[in-house]
Every structure is written in structure tokens, then in C-alpha cells.
Image 1 (cartoon, rainbow over the protein chains, first blue to last red):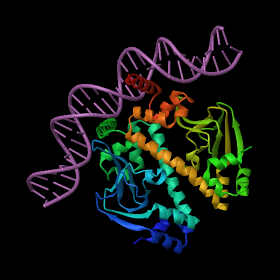
Image 2 (image 1 turned 135 degrees about the horizontal axis):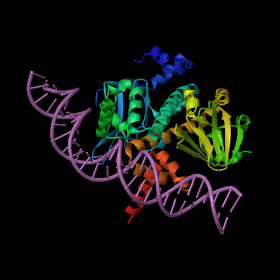
Image 3 (image 1 turned 45 degrees about the horizontal axis):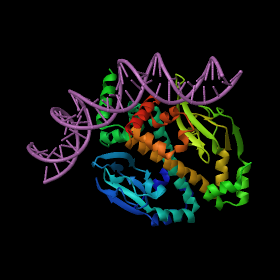
Image 4 (image 1 turned 135 degrees about the vertical axis):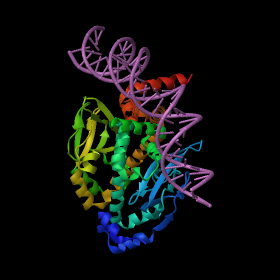
Length: 196
Length: 196
DNA sequence: AGCATTAATTATCTTTTGTTAATCTTTCGG
DNA sequence: CCGAAAGATTAACAAAAGATAATTAATGCT
């Protein structure tokens, strides 16, 4: 079900964990297999879970009063995600989460995760690893919004996440850059003509 | 030097720590007293430290090639800050940090902090507390950039941080909202006239 | 392959923002 | 209390972005 050796390679902190630690942890997880388009967490939900993307790609988006969707985040292989409103603010999720591709998620209930963390402090290393990773991404992203123009943000996104560029519609990327799809299209044209 | 009782009240996780834990931790910290305008971390520096704002207010800003400053963050009492480039990316800081008011910082070297965390896992709770706090702020901030117009971001900032509104120049707030001070001035006028 | 749906681009027009510079306003040091 | 310096506002113009709609391109489905 889960390839321990591969995970160990990808995440150094797991070396600290004994085989039984890992088995005990995985015992509380569930594998969720999703088809393209499957929703696994709905706007308004309070179901606190932490998800690890084993394979595939996940999108979260906000739906406004007119039914318009705005993508706020994409998460792909080996990334962790959750609804921060639920887990950090104890509020219902503002966003809906669904799979953009056939996706495998390893999920664990947030309350159970807390219990496991209390019982086994060695798991803390994993939590810290993913929190640091997310935090560094977020801090960078904010500074990009502050310091860079939409065009520069797009160019940075394209170099930072080249894989995603061919994997998702441009309109999702436009949303994440904080601009409209129409505007991104114009920016792309501007860039294309600028290079001669 | 530091009022233990007050800190205990403000931060529940400290209840977990014994008196000697706290003393041992504080033994490795230093108090830094700053006058208005004093710089304590310069763009390009690699000095890894974690700072706790005991009192006062701190601003971090980026200086571009033309010498123009752009404020990216403000931190006030009971908040933690550090250069994430240094501590998370092991790169020189892109930002300069200075005091906007007479400020007292409790600082600890990042390497020493890591050692203390290894030795005393109970300190982990403190780290987790501040990381969660920062992370939730950052995630919200990003979603605001994605979902809200500059005007709405300003209104939200005004309600979320009313204290800061009278404490710092508007141009710093404009920077943090990702717009120019001129544009913020126009937005403020628009809002003022809208309410009759 | 062919049709229907969705995404991307283009066009047009309106609104907002950036830029630069001038004018008030406020703050602060002497 | 006055004058210098910094902050905020206003003005005028250029550039970019939003909104809406039409057109073209790409994708998916049977």
C-alpha cells in the first residue's frame, strides 16, 4: 500500500523513526483514491484531517456568491495539505478541495494526529518538517505579492514550478497570482513579443 | 529583566515548562534595547537569530537598486520574528530590520536554539505555537491577496490591526498591501466619500 | 471522427493603478 | 516657535488590470 523505502528516501526525518513507529503511525491513516474531479473536502466542512499527496494533484478553490471559482492553491506529490481554517482557527473551511488528476491521498484525522504526536514526540520532526516547508513557501509568496508585479510573479512561478505549467489550466495559475485569466493571457502575449 | 508571570499568562504552552526549564532557556537569550530607527539586522546579513518582541515595534523592509524601501512586515509586542531566508533557506537576508519605536527584543542564536530544542523536547511546544501563529497569518494573507481587491484588503487590515493604523505611517501599510502609497491615498478617499 | 464543453485569446471599454511632481500637513529638533 | 524633513494628499497622464463578450483553440466524450 505504501512504499516505506521510497518515503524514507524522500524525507530524511523519517530515519529517526523506528519501523514500529512508522507502522503504528500508518495504522491510523487511510488511503483515499480519487478520480479526476472528485471532491474530498467541501467549503463549509469542519472535518479536520491532514492529507499527504502520495500521487496526483489537488486543487483548492473558493466559490463566491455568483458561483465563480477562484483557485487558491495546488498541491502535488509528496506535499501535505489541510484546511487551515479547520485545523488552526477551528472554523469551517472556506475552500473546496478536489483532485485534478487521479490522486492517492494518505489521510489522518487531525485529533488522532494530535494524540499520536503527544504519545510519540519523535513524530514531531515530521510535523516540523512540513510546517517549515509550508511556512517558507508562504513567506516567499507574500513577499512576491509585495515586491513583484504580476508579470514578474508569473515569470517567477514559471521558473519555480515548471512542472505545474503544463499540468493545469492557465486560469488556475492566474487565480493564484491574484489576477484574472484575461490579464494573464495579455501578460503572456507581452512576454512573448518582448523576446524579439 | 523578564517578567516570568506575565509571559506565563500570555503563552499557555509555557505552563508545561518547569521553572528551571525557563531559566535554562533564558540563560541563552540576550536582551537588546533599541531606540527608534536602530537597525538590528541588515540586508545581506547571515546572522541567524530568533527575536521575541518584548515591547515596541519592528519593521522589515527591502531596499531596491534605486534605494527605494518597501516594507514587507511589522511585528509588535509578543510576536516572534526572524529572517526566514537565513533560518529556512540558509541564504543572506533580503530584508533589513529596525525598530520603529523604542523596542526591547529578547534574542537567541538560531544554532543554540536548535541545540536547546534537541536537549529539551518540551520547548517544542513553544516553537510549534509560534510557527502555527505565523503560518495561519501567512496563509490568510495569501488568500487575501488572491481573493480581495486592494480596497478590501485595506479595509480588512484596518479591522484586523486597528492598533497599527495609528502607530505607523500609511505608506508602510500600502507596501504591505502590495500597492503604492499614492494608490492607498486614493482608496482611502474613495472609501471616505462612499460613506456619504 | 464529430460534437459539445471548456480553456485561451482577442477586442472593446471602463476602472484602477503606477509614475512623477506639486501642494498641503504633520512631525520633530533646535 | 520656527523651519526643515517626512508623510499624505492631489493632479495629470501613461500603463495595466478588470469586465464583458466574441472568437479561436484545445479537450473530452460517445
